[in-house]
Length: 178
Ligand code: IMP
Image 1 (cartoon, protein in one colour):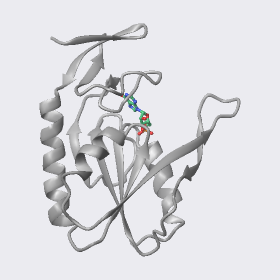
Image 2 (spheres, protein in one colour; image 1 turned 120 degrees about the vertical axis):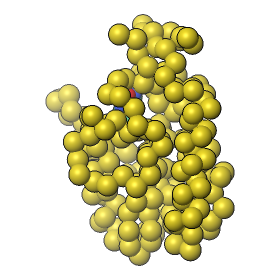
Image 3 (tube, helix red, strand yellow; image 1 turned 60 degrees about the vertical axis):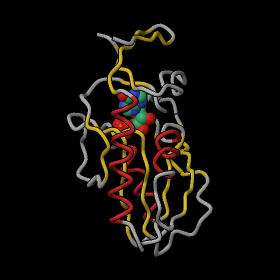
């Protein structure tokens, strides 16, 4: 079993690169069919989604635009950060079909904030795509249109996901050892 050490913690292989790429291909095939003629704009949420988005976008053969956005969260004295804004939304999304591209949806709180912010710009439709989804952690009702892989409620890293900023640069996904 493949193992890696990141800072003070040990992780073991959870989702192989082959399985990830299969999910990417499957998602792209669905998008090519379902979003054809809709001229979608993909909103990629940085930092985590950059590797997934890069692999996914190369497999799309439809007319589309891609925008990379960062969430600015302002931490006050409390430990919970409040998301205030999306940095980098240059394109006019009014009347457009928007597809949010996320690396992972956990509780769904981040997703809810992002959708709230995007709605202010009056898009025609908002769709959601995530590579990874933790159904047992999910607390929201928002429909997730494209889910790559469902995973247990454990902490994972790799393929864009980090532990304190490290380990985004692996081809496989690893889970924290218990
Ligand atoms: P939320 O709970 O759905 O709002 O997820 C918030 C954010 O936490 C995600 O966008 C990720 O950046 C991060 N996150 C959630 N679960 C994991 C994980 O297992 N590993 C690394 N980051 C995670």
